[in-house]
Figure 1 (cartoon, helix red, strand yellow):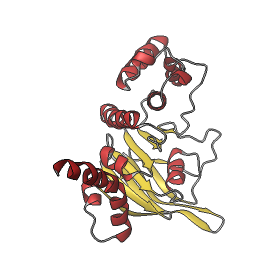
Figure 2 (cartoon, rainbow, N blue to C red; figure 1 turned 90 degrees about the vertical axis):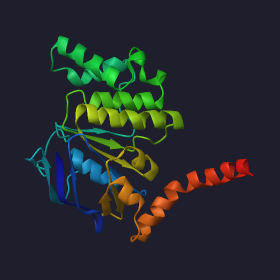
Figure 3 (cartoon, rainbow, N blue to C red; figure 1 turned 60 degrees about the horizontal axis):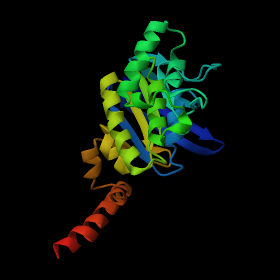
Figure 4 (cartoon, rainbow, N blue to C red; figure 1 turned 180 degrees about the vertical axis):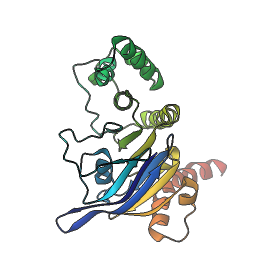
Length: 254
């Protein structure tokens, strides 16, 4: 379980992350959704250890993690972040990029684990290609495979669906759910697209101006009646679907 309480971060006089608390169970996906500048990526980088907060606490499986210790390597060992740019080694093959995360293990274990991850992430067929030779979705799945190679307790995904075409986007959504359930990892992903969150998340947190307005199941977020901002956010996510239905189904019916 990943748990954070009262996380706060200021830049000069502006509060970017304002007293945020979340809890994510093993095998669960929490999607943090918000507009650009809402503070969601800063929050994700605090969870990973890349940014030090001004206040707050973090626990991983009930073990307290020191957020304020000056570490040479910022990332927490049991919390892995997959950034938007993937950070794959361009001259290494797909399987080699995954294997690089396992250099401290025996050759036999590395070979077995890489094979497992290639299959789990659906990239066995491209294992001998280099990153420039594969699609954006395949790069993203390679980056996820590398991140979970050492079986971390938490996985953080920064805008995993950005810049993907619809086919890769759909495939990656289903793969993320499969990977998180199979590996029993607590997952936090941030996205600006509420529709993506509806399709993958067990819980959704709506963020605005550094605050979490509401955390609940996709169904409860979809049915929100009181908060006008959340209602508008939901409407903007499903409006294209309604427009499509009105345009094509109404015309075919007539």
